[in-house]
Structures are given as C-alpha cells and as structure tokens.
Length: 159
Image (tube, helix red, strand yellow):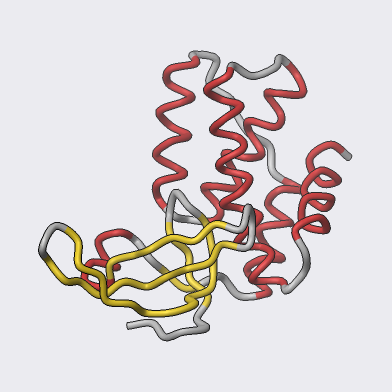
C-alpha cells in the first residue's frame, strides 16, 4: 500500500507522485484509486489500489540506480533488428515490463536508429512514449528538472 507523497512508477505511463487517494464510483462499483501526477506533460492518472501488483506498480529507482541507467545509456551498444515488425514487438514488450533498463534500451535503440536511418511514424510515437517514461523516472529519482535529464540523454547518445 502506498501513501500520499510516495513516488511510484506506472508501466506504460511513467513515474509520478501520489497526490491523493480517492474513492470513485464507476459503473456502480466503488473503488479506491491512487491519483498520481506525472511531472512530464502535467498528466494525472488514476490507478485502482486493489490490483497494483498486477499492473506492475513499483517504487521509483534510487539515485545510484539512476546513475547506472545513465551509464547504461552512455556505454551500451544496441543490436537493432532490421525487421520493423520484430523490432516493434520486442520494444513494446520491453516498455510494458516496467523495467527502467529495458525502457532505456528502447530509447537508446530507437534514437540510434533515428540517427542512422530515420524512424517510421509508429516508432517515432514509441520513442516519444519511451522517452517520457524514462525521463519521468529519472527526474524523480535524481531530483533534477526535465530539461537537464533530456540534455544528459542527448549527450550520452549523440556525444
């Protein structure tokens, strides 16, 4: 169970801070929800409290883990499948996993591909979504602003 003020990650949406816990009636059923504010895009998400484990909700990574993510971005190489369909499916599985290193791998791979060959519209959307998820967690873990995280990612991936 999480409390107001806790920093959590919602796979496929990103990291945020629980602003409140509210009871809502939807389709005649009353449930308790976490209201999470995501710092990127000023988005609010309602998460049912009764199945947070099934959804994959977890705590935001530590500062040292965030440093490891930056090292991963800086030092890793990525094998990019040439088949668009296979690449898209693999990347979607990584994003849905909720693992920050898997999301970072998607960002790194798609940014490298964008630099070398360009991206399709679908992959551009996927890159944008994966970057939002990655950046939102790094902002909360490191306590730095969105712009600084974006600059670091660009530096590490483009030199």
